[in-house]
Amino acid sequence: MHELSLCQSAVEIIQRQAEQHDVKRVTA
Image 1 (cartoon, rainbow, N blue to C red):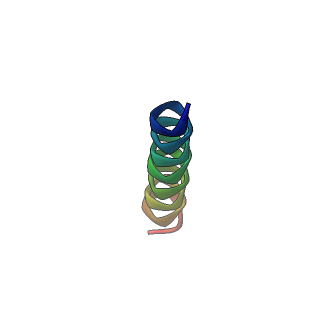
Image 2: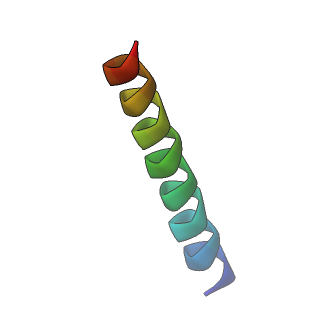
């Protein structure tokens, strides 16, 4: 259970970072 939650958290963080990079690319 804990491992699954950690994986989900990691995925969310990666998605957030990806979104931030996309925004920077668009603004740049």
